[in-house]
Every structure is written in C-alpha cells, then in structure tokens.
Length: 390
Image (spheres, rainbow, N blue to C red):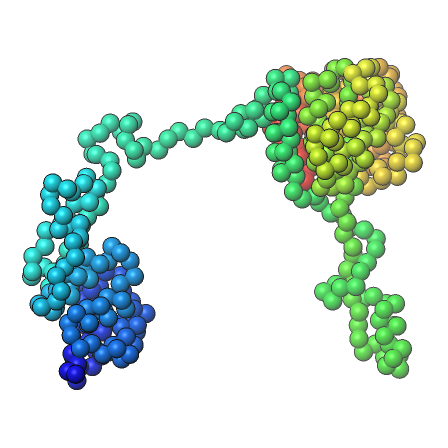
C-alpha cells in the first residue's frame, strides 16, 4: 500500500506545519509538535484523509482552533476534505452581534494571516458612560459592616448573633509570653547543663554531646470583667459575645459584676454561642441592678482566682458609674496594677465627642489603666480586639 509523504522527514514536516499554524494564530508548541512526530511514526498516513485526521488529533486541543487548522490544511493540501461549517462560513443572515467574520483570501490564508472570526466588545463607544457595562459600580459596605457601625441598642438578637460570629472570626491568634521554664531545643541558645552532664556520664565525663534548650512560651493570661448593671443594659450582651471569643481563643477567665461578682467562664465555653449566652444570663442573679466596681475588684483580688491576675491582661468593660467611694476604687486599682501585666478599660462613652472622665469612679481608675478604648459599636469592639491581640 503506498504511503503518503514517503521519504519525507517527519520531524521537518511537523515543525514546518506547526509553524504555519502558529503564523495563522493557532496556539501550538513543542508538545504538540512531538505528538505529531510520534503519530506519524505510529500510523503512517496512506491518504490525505488519513493525514488530515492524524494531524488534527495530534495538534488540535481546543474547539476554536478547528477553523484555523482546517483553513491552513486546505491551503497546503488542495485536495483535502471539504471544510466543516465554521462561524466564518455562516450565512450573513444568521450571524450574531458577538462574532464578526474576518474576510480572508487564498493568499492571506496561505501566509497564515487572519482569524476565522473576531470577538466584538459588548460596549458601544457612543453609549452613555453612566449606563455602559464597563462602568465600575460603586462599592458599598456589606450589611454586616453597616450594622457594625450602629449602636448596640438598635440591634435585634439575630443581628447580635451575626455580628458575634464576626467577633469570633476576628480573634484568631493571641500573643504568648516567655515563662521561666525551658525545653530542649537544638536551636536554643542556652546549654541544658543537667541533660548535657547526664549524657557525659557515658563518655567518661567528656561533654561530647551538648544539649541546648530554649524558654517555653505560653499564651498570656487574660481576665475579663463585664459590667451588667442597669446603666450597661444595652451593651452587656455585645460585651459578653466578645468575651466568649476570648474564652475560646485565649482561654480567658470571664467575670460579670453588678452588686456582686459572678464567674462566667464555664458557661461561655459552651460550643453553641446561643446556649452559652443563655447559660451566662441565667448565672447572673443581680443583672441590671446597681454597680459596685471597687468592691467586686477587691473580692476578685482576695479570692482564689486572684492568682490568675498575675502577669495577665485585665480587660474591664464598664461605663465607670460606681456607688463605692472613689478612695476604694483607687485602692483596688492600685492592687490590681501591681499584679496585672496590662489593664485596658472599655467605656461605651469614650468615643463620644468631648468625652472626659468626669465620673468619680472612672476618674479614680483611669490613672492606673494602660489604655482607655471606646466600645459603643461592634466596630469599636473589633478594633479593640485587634489592638489587644497584637
């Protein structure tokens, strides 16, 4: 049986034909060229029809390239099979507004110029820029971002739950502190004497192997206190949502206070946010009553939870209204200052224009605080959480 292209170098033919296709606008590279050489070796074509399908299977990877391939193949082999119907050969009555046929003659196709069709842009130059599809729309904040700027008293329970999820997603890491303990680490700078001497007993007391160690780092302790008195009724729920995020990420201790002190850590550690808030609400018996900030701080310092304050970040969320005398607040905050690493006070009124700590309790506590942050909206709480997690 006679073989087409007998005596022709398959590699030279493949390179020349691929180069013709590339000139016509078809994407073909070394991989396709190698596939064509192997295809011609595995199945030598005996006719133009067999050559057409061999070359087409080896080179064509995308459906839009069929028109370019058929045009180039037909220009090289005049007796090639009839060209399939392409967009360029569609009658003018059936053409759409997206694909515009590009006229091409025999000389232009042989030279590899032109494309089977051109893609028209969907926009019209004479259209109104404001109504153009290419007009960039105005970016507006999402619904949650808009809710985060609203005061707490304007939010319903469902909106509080949605924004609580944002708070939980904001606090992803918590800073660590250096402890006095050390652990074995080959990259440590300090030599572990006991471990090195223990190994030296096996080598006639020669320290052949030197063991190194590094300081152990642990998450810094966090103790959070939330005011649940009558003056904080609008902010208490949002603050407790924030403090639940601290219990999950930083394993913080959370206390609520009004006239007495209540530990809320076990309740807020529940996996369900709704159930955690329900348990915390049920645990507080003096909610929306009076306020005794200094008395509750002294009670915390004197309790067995007072040791958790050593080297801890203490966060107090309150408006500063206190029925205790300012002298008692000064004494309690002085003790807390000597024991805590950092004291941060969240005040819902601190962000108001012209704010000044004129309340006696707030004025007495402020000199012992490291930071006074506003906390009137969820946006303020998110900014405060990012500030504390640095």
